[in-house]
Every structure is written in C-alpha cells, then in structure tokens.
Length: 282
Image 1: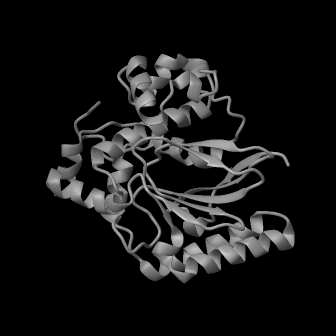
Image 2: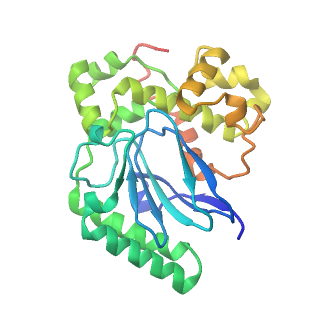
C-alpha cells in the first residue's frame, strides 16, 4: 500500500472557518508524523477509527501513525474552532477524543465516513460527509468571535504590529485582548503572532521564495529580524533546524507534498495591510 498525502481547500461555505482539509494514507510501515503549531485546532478522523480533536499547539509533537491507515483532517483558522463545550485554552497541547466533546455525534460521524470509504474505496465521499456535518454545526452555533477574527488578520506576519497597539485599536486593554484570545484561540496574542510568523516562513518556503531571495531574505520576508532569529524560532517550535525541517533544501521545501491549499490563501494576505498605521514590531 503506497503512502499518500493531499490537501484541498474547503467548500466555499466553510472557507471562513476552515483553512484546509487534508487526507493521509500510510504505507506498510509506521509513519512518524511531525505536527507543528498552526494557531488553530484540528479534527483528525482515522477512517475506521476514533476521531480526535487536537488543540492549539505551542510546540511540535511527533505521532506514530499505524501502517495502512487513512486519516481525514480538518485544519481550522485561529479563532474559528468548531463548536465545543470548553474554552480553547483548556485544550492547548492536548488531544481529546471527539466523543468527549461532541458525544454521540462523533461516533455517528466516524461510522458514516468509514462506510463511505468502504462503499467507494475513495476518501473524497467521506470528506463530503464531514463538511456537511461541520456546516450544520457552525450554522447552529453561530459562535464565531468576529473581533478576534479581525485581530487574527491583523496579527498575520506580513505587516508586524505591536500587540498593545492592536488591543488599543479594538478599544480593549492588553489584558482584555489576552483573555479573549485565550478563550477563543487558546493562546495569547503574542504567542499567536509568533506562530503565524512561523507559518509565514513555511508558506514562503513552500512557494520557493528563497530560490530568488535566499534564506536570509525569506527570514526577513516572514517577519524575522535575520536568519539566526528564524533558526532559533524554528528549533523552538519544531525541534529541528530549518534545513532539516525542509528536508535538506533551504531554497524550497522538498517534502514532496503539495501544500498550496493550505498556504496559498495565507500568502494572499501579504497584499493586505489591515492596520498599516499601527506601530511596527519584531
């Protein structure tokens, strides 16, 4: 059985809350998956197994995936987690059985997705079932914090701003913004800003920006002060150097997977400066 990993954009109705949907199939051996901080939560549903929710990460963790496993995952935008009975700071660096959060719905969802795979032999119909459930749950809850969604856009790496100035722009104190961020994102605005900056580096690496600008230019483009700053943050967040993380090629990620569904929208935000008049920060 051959290995496979693909990503795709969600349906337009879910695009404001879902960053990407991914499908992974492991081969005949155990696969060591390195999970990285993205700023958001993830649903991970092994077809034929028990679904879990991965809370926001502040550092990497490595998961051994069993042989011949097919997993469908949903990566959510920061501040756009699916409806949950807990606040997100309780889920930081945690993996929780989805049944503990959604009750019987989790089992019904897993059963329906596994049945779709068995009938068709393809994961795509299972993805359709998952999207339909998510759309129904989001419509029923209507719980998205619009202010924090705007704050997340401001904290993107392309136009670094001071967190205190962001709070003032939204007529909040820094402590108020922090509490709101912990509740709806899971981490503080500063931690989120650092995570998004690193995601910006990965987005530029996937796009091959370093091939023209060099690794130092890529680091500055993502919001780091220099290449050494990038290297320190990469080791802190992933446990390895940029070269190792990018599979030996600093000019372009050589992992062999197409991550454009995840990073193309991220890169599109480079052209937007939501609050260009706020104080610059590194």
